[in-house]
Image 1 (tube, helix red, strand yellow):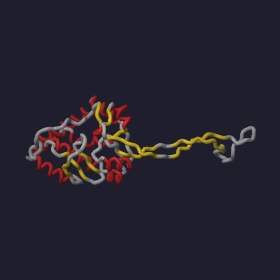
Image 2 (spheres, helix red, strand yellow; image 1 turned 135 degrees about the vertical axis):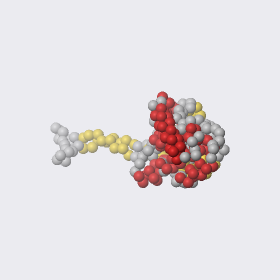
Image 3 (cartoon, helix red, strand yellow; image 1 turned 60 degrees about the vertical axis):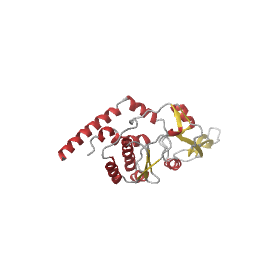
Amino acid sequence: MAEKREDQMKEITERLERGVKELFTSDQYTEYLNTMSKFHNYSFNNTILIAMQKPEATLVAGYQAWQKKFGRYVKKGQRGIKIIAPTPIKLREEVEKYDPETHELILRPDGQPETEEVVSVIPRFRVTTVFDVSQTDGKPLPEIEAKELLGSVENFEIFMKALEMVSPVPSRFAPIDGEAKGFYNSETKEIVIREGMSESQTMKTAVHEVTHAMLHDRDLMEEQGEKKNRLTREVEALYPCFYNVDLLNYFP
């Protein structure tokens, strides 16, 4: 029995490695990277603001950015997410020039002090509004994850129980607005999974969000001095789920 499990695990690992290699060298992945690079990487404070107002948010951008960069538009009646945007002011002024070595005032031939233009930046901030992808319609964004899975899973309840035991945070099922199938809330330290999905999709989403909780908890990353952008986090969370459909057949 142990030998059989080892053979199965070896086969799964080999197939996973081949699948990930194919994914990372595909045109689809290149398109995905190009699109994701257009999204702004928000500051720690703004990430908290987004999580507080719309914890299920996955990709956010401003009203104009959705139209110009992604060919999408914000649906009518959507409530925006308020964040803080930097709007620095540049001031230019003429100041007297000093010798960097002697620190003496430099004089022109006419005896008047020589001057130079100095630009100083004064930090200013304003409140701006962004919207999650679930609040928009239009041109589809490229995806690297599989479409929604259908069907049941043998030993589904046992698997979910085991996943619950290894997860660092509790999970619960609830209705979720928008297109997100689940999310990890770094503020409340919990995983929320959309209720009413198939067992296959529920299991895939649970694995994905537990991976986020294990690797991408905000407090944990800050404690370890790690900084990962959204693209890195999603690719890391994608890895254990990439061949989810095949893995279902090997669950003991």
